[in-house]
View 1 (cartoon, rainbow, N blue to C red):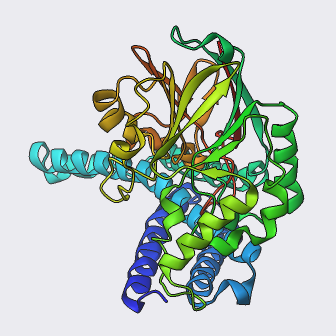
View 2: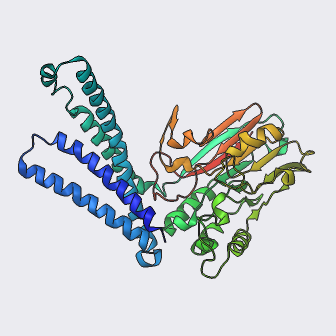
View 3: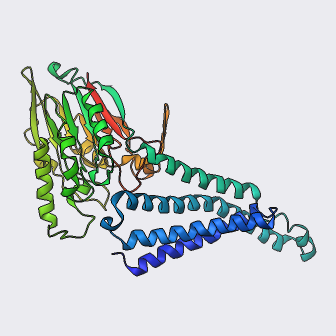
Length: 415
């Protein structure tokens, strides 16, 4: 249960933001008829009231009461409205700064008579008001449309060339997925369609780089018969992500401790037929030649995420193999430790960022707010002979949708 103080503070911020945005609405509607104004203002404050009530319902009820689907969308709409108004407020603030500067200049350089003559100059800008409202509305509209993209799996194919790749492994196709977050799913058939799309690629090996659940091992119960269909000639291998440790939920839960939950989650991987790599490596063999596949627990350079990963355990013994692939959930690990301490690791596969489930991805241009937190956040990165690929995720968490950054199945062909 959230603390009453925290809830009160958030609602107060919501109402202050709503009041600020309302000033711009009044400015752009000042020429409207009294009847139109009444309707417009009533609708605006009715939406505000609905948002506050929805937030309170979300905070003080459980998933069992509302149902996962209703609860998820309720949260997304409330937060979407809040973010849309916040974006709009940025433009209003710019306008208010402009007005303030002009007002101060008027006080300093004009007498009272002259100041009366420029009073219209420092009125609120209709252009910035409209632009702010349009920007906020566009954001909210895109978030609503994004609900339909959460199961819109795209297959991204690429070839990666390595000089030291053994000849037997040339042409090997790796299916890389990450961040399933099964606790967020509400459409089993849609999830299954993505699995079939992956299998249609006929990969030689499947690698999953963490966050199979949001918090609890039981979230996979309804999806075991979906993901156990993932099979490949060279096997399916997996690692843990930050959410897999259950750090974001209060324990015990339904009589299960945090430690037991992690053990149950390890069993989930085993029951799926996946080989979970916990700070260790395995040897992959093909036509008499060998490469090393390393998998570590979550290791992040960001202070708020855990450092369970142990390269000092996973790497020893791999020196004799000419080519190495590392599965490490958090891409910040690449810059912080792999590049400097383990230059013989050829390819790192990560996930974690989700591309923030929001951004722009078109040929020649890619942007998401997450790039201001993670240098490597989606796609391929190279430094000398080392390569990192960051998968933007198979699932979703928090916001039940994706805008611009779609869920991805990555097919990597080694050449």
